[in-house]
Amino acid sequence: MTLRGLIWTAVAAAATMPLSAAGAPIKVITTDTNLADLARQVGGPRVAVESLSRANDDPHHIDPRPSMVVKLARADVFVRMGMDLDMWADALLDRCGNRKVQRGGKGYTDCSGAIKPREVPTGRLDPSLGDIHAFGNPHYLMDPGNGVAAAAAIAGALIRVDPGNRTEYESRLRSFREQIATAMKRWRAQLQPLKGTPIVIYHRNWVYFTARFGLREYATIEPKPGVPPSPGHIQNLIASMKRDGVRILLFETYRDRRYADRILSATGGRLVVAPIAVDAEPGVSSYFALFDCIVERLRSAGR
Ligand SMILES: [Zn+2]
Image (tube, rainbow, N blue to C red):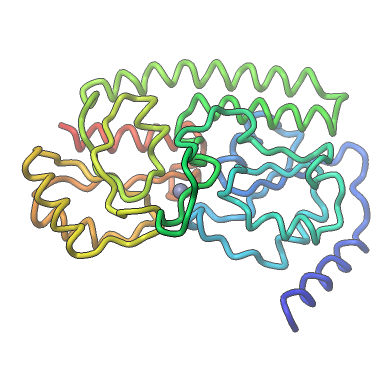
C-alpha cells in the first residue's frame, strides 16, 4: 500500500474510535520531547502527552509516518517548535482531518511565536549557503528562558481547549517559571568558570545556550548548515584550535563522533557529549534534568 493509502486507512480507523469522555485527559501531541515535557509541566495530571519524534532523532530529519496522522486526528492540542524545524508536520496536519489542531484551530500552538529568534537571515537565501534555517535559528529551547516562554504558549492552548481549569494551568505555569528561575541561578553559577571559554560545536544547535550562559562559540565543524566538513576544513580547524588553545568540543548525543575523534587526536582537547532533548538518555527525564546534565558535563570538561 502507498503511504497515502496507509494514511487514509489509519485516519478511517481513528474516526471510528469513541470520542473521549468528559473528564478524560486533554490529549497533547508535540513535535519533540522537550515540548512534551513542557506540556507535562503545565498540564500536570490534566494532560496525556506524546511526542511525534523520538529523543535521539536528529530534529532536522524526521520521517513522517502514518501513525503520526492517527495521533493528530485524536489530539486536542498540537504543539510545535515552528520556524522551519518541523515543516514535516505540515503534511500530517493537512491529512489528519482534525480542525482543532490545524493552523488557526483552538489547539494549535507554534511556540516559536513566543520567543525572540536569533540568526534570522537578512540577505537573499540560495543553495550555496547550505541548509540554512530560513526563519532564524530554531533551536531556541536550549535557552531555559525560552522554555518558560514556550510553556506559557502551551498553557495558553490548554486554557483555550479547557477553560474550566484555567487557574490550575496558570498556577502550574507560575510554579514552572519559579523553578526555572531558581535552577537558572544554579546553572549560571556552575558555568561561571567557563564564561568566555571558546567551544567548538558541530551544528548551531547551541546558539541560545551559549548566549544565555556566556560561553563563546569558536567554530562549527560543519562548514555550512547541513553540509559535512571536507578533510581540508577539518585540517584548518585543527590548526586554528591549536593556535588559539581551544580545547572543548560539544556534540549532541545523536551526532556521529568520527569528526570529533579526528580533531581530538590532533589537538588533545575534550569531547563533551550532551543531550539536547528530554529522554535522550537515562536520567534525562525532564527539561530540568536536561540542563543539569549539559551543565555538569561542560563543567567537568572545563576543569
Ligand atoms: Zn538546525
